[in-house]
Image (cartoon, rainbow, N blue to C red):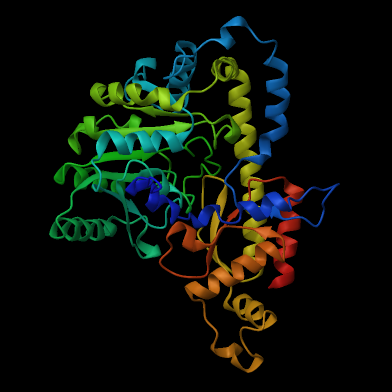
Length: 440
């Protein structure tokens, strides 16, 4: 009797690996711990805000209380009314919306990964394209294609044009190529503040993106997951402006095509709670569809109740965000001082948990010599290549015990770039930089 076959989509999944996740097993097997494993791998790669960890643990312990009978029941899959009300209040207090956000404009999911997948299902038929500027968060391809079967199409940009209006020409060419191949683009996906560049899109660039979306009848999804992790508010940098704050949005795009994402993982340092939300005050049909998908993204009733209670303490939340931003700024300056002292190129950032930087060629050469892949007399001719980048990266994680994701995980167009997460314990950051220094 023949063994029944997996579906075509499932079979494709068997051969799909996400480079961004490749090192997680190595870290799990040998995690750094100051007391029990001081030689272990320091995780300076996952974008998690460790600067406020103890602050959050203390607060959650103080409000967790006892279980209630309601915690044993099915929860509202789209978020309890109390939770969505507090989330709406976050938007109204911190995002300067042109009109007050209502709790009915929000659908809560078990993390933004689920939210992105639900949006892919809601906006795309299998084979439809979602346009994403590079470099970009490396798991988006997985989120959009694994089950929804949309096509995550990365638009390759020169790094110097990543925040420029000139990049629109690359998107126009991408649309043309898709249509010439018989395909259809349905969504433009943006992150502002940007991951991995850590800067906010200038208003004029967003306006051009909106106009591009209108010309081609695209949904425009703006992921604002780092909106409250802005640590540089000086007049000399591009300020963050939430899409929700645009009074004249309808002058550039049909607002019903615009969707905003946010959640707990980044600004609130609660990655493990798996909670994100979809917001669209302008498209009730889309929200009804996401609501219908929400049972596939259930969270425990207890989690909703606890987070609603946390967010209801506005004094604590505002204090936590202020503390977070100050600590992020402090750690960022420590990181860039190190990079500058070793003549490493980096992109100055103003938000988020990480800095995008390029390792010096000499580090590539030194590592390849140490591994016996390049002879000493060949060092002068050694350059960064995609293959060399992966060799250096794996050695850095497994032998030098510092984890940072490689640029290839973010679809970088130029080899040798890495993303360093500085939003970790200050002592661990210092040790990670010391280990990096020893291999430079």
